[in-house]
Length: 366
Image 1: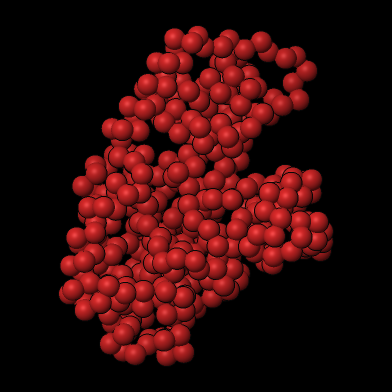
Image 2: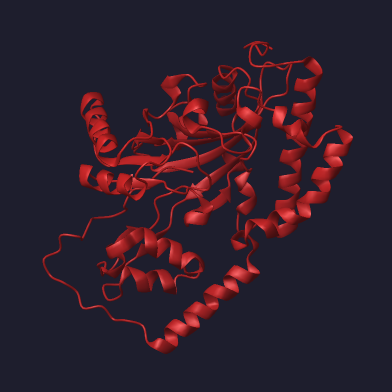
């Protein structure tokens, strides 16, 4: 996914007095790297996807037998090709929603880098957007290719990386600072849906001690060192700066677990008002029954009241109930959450097939 955190605390990038970093010894770095490997081995939230999904396979086969078809689940969202399990267009899905609830977004079709950069600059100028903005592939998974772009020069560099690649989405940067993944479903025939879960996303931040570089602070952090390579790649040259004592520096910008964001179970954020608001938005997307809204908001009280949030992305069948990655959840608790969401997906797909429902027959009040 797909949204950006803000830097916390005063910026020191323009500090006139350079600080001489206190670098860790080789022995300390060997120890920290060993601790990082141990964390990745013992904390399942950092395990590769195959290790998470392999135990799910027998259950999926059982669901397929019960509902008489492995592909029954792909009918859960008739409005999205294959229900959104692979290769879906983010732009096409966002067009299903009432646009007042969606972060302002523009579609950039495949074109030479220079032409796309010029098109983007014109869009920013005509729509009154401000830099930075967000660029991301129209078709992509797990935050791949999502970047915070600070200037036209940075946009040109981004497009040069994929000279004639697929379509790209440009989004106005929502101020946040809060982001959540709201997993929603509605059974065919019901007028209102339900929130299965909410993931409360926490972007990684380190606090300076006046001596250590950001790179060193990342490696010394008991959580961040498990994903140090990803975080430091995102930081680029900023990793070598030395924050002042007490200065908080945001080191992750993408609301995706594999890009360094911590996912917490946000069950406490679910309210009747929020559920009603999400259900009303989803009801406008005829042929959508199951998936996760990634949203940004600025005021927790407004969010609880079902107001003041915008959708950054809507994912279909391949989306996860990402609250399962809460560090407090054990591996088998995560498996139970996965089973729950796939059980619902198959049930919805089977009911859609039984009704002969498609995009046209799925009315707002169905």
